[in-house]
Length: 154
Image (tube, rainbow, N blue to C red):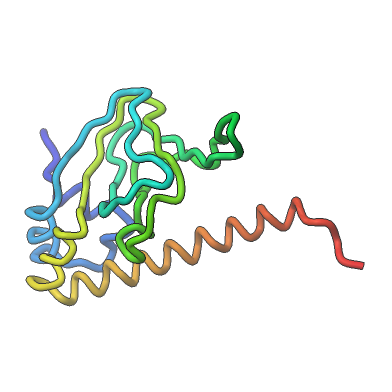
């Protein structure tokens, strides 16, 4: 039996706390996209205005190291999201995202988010709180990993 987009959204951490009516509105503001293994979803430095949720497959997050290449710094699996910062700060992408395998994504553009804010202000506020929570979690993890490479004081 096929799963509806609102059922997929209900399983995503960023949509925690939305009720069925709010999820139904959000469902109308997103679209499904597919990326084949090896496809680039977005490039570091590109202007961008969308947030994606991995439904199926896996994505690699790559960060440019120098002129010779990039390092895989993270993997995204079903339930994970990307692009939260672009939705919040309107800055260029901080990393490149490439499909490690055939991947299905649910995409929310900034325009879709603005429509959600107008139609369901509480849902938009909850989504932003969840984004803030996720960004804090990611920053804590990054800080912990970075500390492993820093020389001890004194």
